[in-house]
Amino acid sequence: MKQLRDFPRTLPGALFTGAFAATSILSVSHPAQALFQDSPKAVLDEAWQIVNREYVDTAFNQVDWMAVRQQLLSRNYSSTQEAYNALRQELERLGDPYTRFLDPEQYRALTNQTSGELSGVGVRLRVDANSKMLTVVEPIANSPASEAGIRAGDRIVAIDGKSTRGMTVEAASRLIQGEIGTQITLKIEREGQRPFELPLTRARIELSNVSHALRQENGARIGYIRLTEFSGHAPEQMREAMENLLKQNVEGFVLDLRGNPGGLLQASVEIARLWLDSGSIVRTVDRRGASEEIKANQTAMTKLPLAVLVDGGSASSSEILTGALMDNNRAVVVGSQTFGKALVQSVHALSDGSGLAVTIAHYYTPGGLDISHRGITPNVEISLSEGERRTLLTNQALIGTDNDPQYLQAVNALKPTIALNRRNPTPSPSLLQLSVGQGQQQSTQ
Image (cartoon, rainbow, N blue to C red; front, side, top):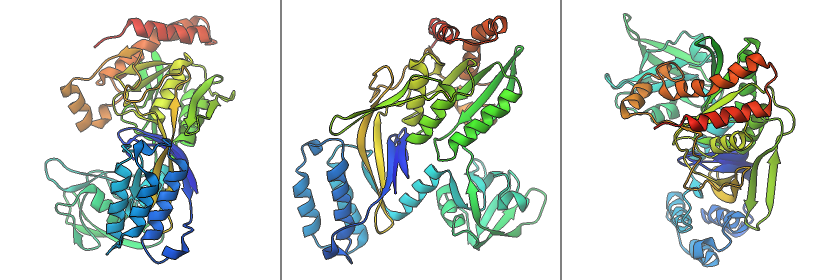
């Protein structure tokens, strides 16, 4: 199975993302080297073949890639981990941080992240800054945790009898996740109660990457939507959010992509088509110079005015969506410079459960912009101060409210077009373009 993904951080098809931002595809391949069938060399050769066949730079960063294969397969490895390390070292020579090897645990985590679902009990966790204890941020709706009565603020002090003192969220997640239908016991501390043990049964959990709310802003009805990642379920979640807000007669939308590292390429395309009726969405160019243009297909759900919020954490798929809406004059973009990741990656499952992400193409915005290492400059530039950033980080309920200066600027950028639409109820491209132009004049630091 092959996935395209757009990475910064962070499988089946195509993806785009930020700090580890890229766009990717996921595939399952099978090693043909029967000679190494019971050796870690089988996986090394499998990975080498994929890079040799797909890597975007046919010169391999001036590395003799044939010699690399010989070197990898001529060595004797005392363990699988030693073989993995040797492969990672050779991949680093390509000079591309987005072409990387994923051990089985990393590959499973990426699969969960990009599929938008996992097997667990459905709790979001953090380590409390004051108590240093593993604390529930919220139980996911309709999950085993929510049905068992776990509450925000509950402290998990043990997982299957293992103390969580000093445990990271990542380590706790590894213990909590597991096969669907299996049992797990959490020991909970709750304010005003004695610690108690709670047995739970793991289930398939669909992760929500979209949240939305109706905001009343000086008489204007604003539909606020926050998208945190372009997972496999993100397009349907976006559609549901838009439908809900349209039923509430919103007059404009603010789409918040701040901190969104990217995800699946197909998800970014599907979401762009919910907002954009016509025009180009993105153009990709592969190692042979072959170009493919992906376009809107007359399936937009609304023409109401739209502002997109971005920052330095908005990468890959976020930049694809932002570029498509900006270059087609569909939205005014507000915030600070985006991450600047313009690579598409293919993510392959390897035969031992590990994986390989390999850069296979560059992408360009509809206007032909290569955003690599530059990012997208918003129409309305406004940065948060360190104090404002800290406030929003420590109290995320304030994001997308009057306590969020970038959100307020996005609302201000929408107001002229909303006023025009009240006089002319059918938004037109010229009105949308006007909102972008006005946004440029309002640019602040």
